[in-house]
Length: 120
Length: 110
Image 1 (spheres, rainbow over the protein chains, first blue to last red):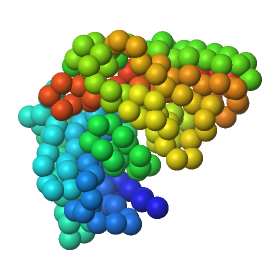
Image 2 (spheres, helix red, strand yellow; image 1 turned 90 degrees about the vertical axis):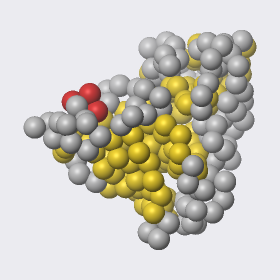
Image 3 (cartoon, rainbow over the protein chains, first blue to last red; image 1 turned 60 degrees about the horizontal axis):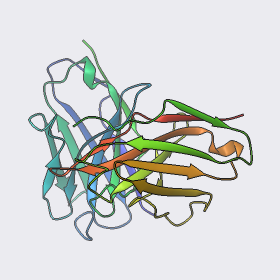
C-alpha cells in the first residue's frame, strides 16, 4: 500500500519561498512509470493542479504558475519536493501530494494534505 | 486555462440516482478521453472515483459511473446512499500537458 505524507512549514511570509516535501512509503519513486504530483486547495475552494515530476525526472508545470514552481525528486530519501517562490496571500491553501498512475490525471494515492498560510 | 464548469450543488434521496455534469471546451474535455472524478469528504483528501472518463478503480462501488459527450462529462451515482454525501470534482487533461479541475459540486443526500 503506497502512502504519501506532506511536511513543511505551516506559515510562510509574503515574497518568500514555500517549500514542502512529500515522503513516499512502499516502492521507489524513481522506478515505475509514475508521475509525482502537487495539487492545492484554498480554504473552502476548489482544486488546482500545480505540476508533476515523472520518475525519470522530467517536470511539467501549470502554465499559470510555471515561473514560480519547481518540483524535484530526492531518490536517496524517496521523496519529492515543491518550491513555490514569491508567495502572496493568494497562495494560502491546503497542499496535497499525490501519485498520478498514468500522467493523465489518474491520481490514485494522495497525502492527507498540509495547510500553508501566507502571512506576515 | 479556465476551470471546468460544474453545478454548485445537487441533491437526491436515498436510493435515487443523480448526475453531475462537467462542461469544458475543445481544449480539454472535448478533445481528450482523460477525465477523472474525485470525491472529497470534509477535512479529507480527495479520492479517485472515475478515471479515463468511465473506468472505475478497484474498490470503488459500481454505483458510480462516468460518461462523456462532446465537451461535457458526467458522473452518475445510482442507488444514492448517505455516505455519498460529499464534494465531487471533475478533472481533465488539457492542451500543453496541464490539468484543469471543475469548481466542485456539493452533493446532499436528503
